[in-house]
Image (cartoon, rainbow, N blue to C red; front, top):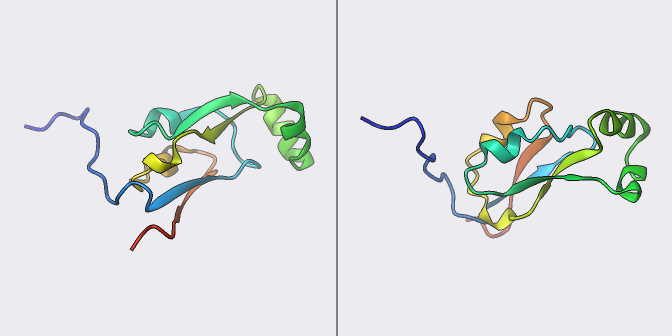
Length: 102
């Protein structure tokens, strides 16, 4: 019998895909950090300069959520499993195939 807590088997080699975060959509709730089995993401507080570069409505949204967003800390660990994409209720994450992939 298989445990429900097992990490899913990688679908691709690390580096074949990279997560891309849409900063205009990310609310920084951290679901991606919980879902990712490889520690690709972290939640951090945006600087005033980073916030100023967002579109107006995105700045309002970010401010309402504590000025936090996800960022990539170990994109090279991504195995393209898609758990981050599924976990993000804002649909702020997509996987992009890299040139490393075959």
